[in-house]
Length: 121
Image: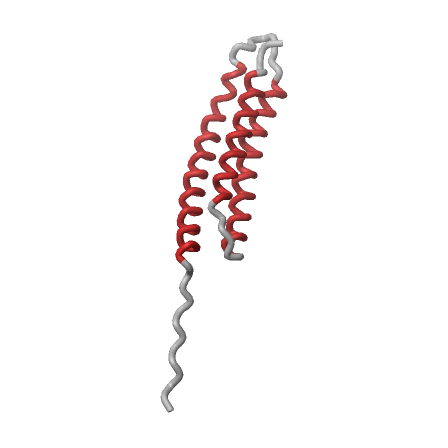
């Protein structure tokens, strides 16, 4: 006789809300870190100051830029896309910015190792 009861809105479970907030916050911190590392890499050209007219191994400087800048940004973008896919599939994604930051730190360390090898021939 009466109208059907209205459906209750679909509510997200508490763990999904926490996962979403933590994932967004960690990606924001991770993005700040990537931008900071890109800014630091601007000064790596000063590693060639000691070369003078004898020349340097510029290939190692190029490798350092590739590892830190290109690979670092690529890792960020891939981890962000995978996190979005996981969030859409209702899977936890908070671990992706943590994993991405660890990979970013390893790439930065490898880049610094390459940068240390830039020296006069």
